[in-house]
Image (cartoon, rainbow, N blue to C red; front, side, top):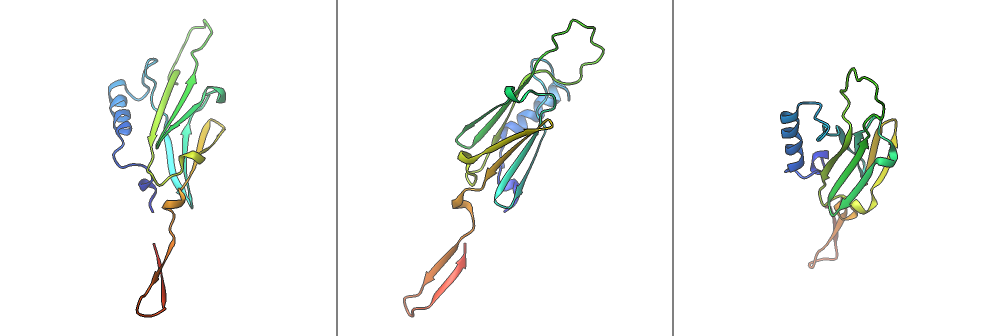
Length: 149
């Protein structure tokens, strides 16, 4: 099973992210910061997603799961200083990203870790989606055949 089979092929949020980046530019705005870049892959029976969230306090990260939709929200607060700003390329404010996952993942068992500015989600493949053997009984003789399903 390929990794892209883990995410639903029609992801309206990816298209929305793309359109938002075209309208607001790569860096976004304070009202709508740019999207969180991700990497996603399958490692044996686990689907792994990493979100880049540098400079974000782990206490500001919220992960919400509803059915097969995972929403990650994070906040990088505005600077409290009155100092003169020379450059401001890092998005600030509250931003979020949603992933629509396939039914073959067990969203009830998601594990999350945050280290060095990277949020890593590990989502196990659901038991019913794992390959299994099916025994075929023959009525003519007592032979049994095993087929991988």
